[in-house]
Image (cartoon, rainbow, N blue to C red; front, side):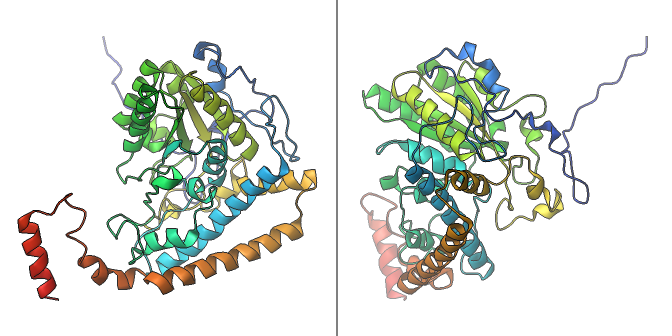
Amino acid sequence: MRQTPLHLRVPEPPARPGTLSDFSYLRLQPAGAAPRPDPFAEPSVMAELAQGLIRVLDDQGQAVGPWAPQIDSDQLLHGLKTMMLIRAFDARMFHAQRQKKLTFYIQSYGEEAISTAQTMVLQAGDMQFPSYRQLGILLAQGMPISDLMCQLYSNRCDPLKGRQLPALYSFKDYGFYSISGNLATRFLIGVGWAMASAIKGDTKIASSWIGDGATAEGDFQTALTFAQVYNAPVILNVVNNQWAISTFQAMAGGADTTFAARGAGSGLAALRVDGNDFLACIAASQWAAERARHNGGPTLIEWVSYRAGPHSSSDDPSKYRPADEWSHFPLGCPIARLKQHLMVLGHWSEQDHKAYEAELDQQVLEAQKKAESIGGTMQEAHHSHASQMFDDVYFEKPWHLLEQEQHFKEGL
């Protein structure tokens, strides 16, 4: 009897350079259609939320449905202005990298709503364990952008002393754990931090971040296991921006199911949310934070978004996807959508928007001049950091390191 030969499936994106964009795979739902369970409901009764899509803003900019949050205009404006600042900062620093003022940069372009909204929901003392596209964590809290620029330049005012890749920040005072270039590691560490908070009887929760591509790493599944077994007070964020470095999200397992379904399959509460809908981001983050903070347990949230720019300054997305694909993404631009909502409410206008864009451009330019004047750029940084290479290696320098340092200084 002749048998059918076996074969493997190798996932392919629905569109390649030179073809038409196709987002039919996204499993969209209308705004307001998803039910909102009690934050302390059992995970088993909310399986449909891992397959659907929580949305609040409709096409007319109205907030509809049970997930519409109670949020005042000042908070909405803070969210919009933070997202606009992220985009202005990204544009200026990406240009600075092309001018060789820094070696490397990663933008948050298209994903600004997710980290901004969640940070606005969390409390002082909570800790976030980011990947590298969550600039909103810092800017939503008012982090001075000139300080960020010094880290990017690796100059003499860089708090990390040039020892970390640009854009891999670390700011404990802002609840921002050190970013790692090794993907997925911080996802699991965030769960451990949350477990420690519970062991101590503290009131602080954790928030861990990962991209769709990195969910293929073992740390991702280990994090889910520990979070579920120990009921850790943590929000597990999966930002599904459709692309890893250059591979489509289906390569990490997003072809026939959702990333949120992995949380449901591990016994966690799991939500799938429109990550370009600021109000949906606020609502889902509030729901998950309340659950974690009152011993309801962890929540995995899949944020459906789109990486509008290149993966990093070293990437050329025109090699693997249609050049205009961002303009066809059906969930739109998070800034444009919140801007429309505020205009519907009468709290913003086109004139306000243009004026604030100009104000931000000037603000970012002035911060750049300040950072360069007090610390220089990458081009001036190497010599100043060389003399610090003996510092912070040991708590107390051993004799052989002291000897090496002395010889080095004598040779300068």
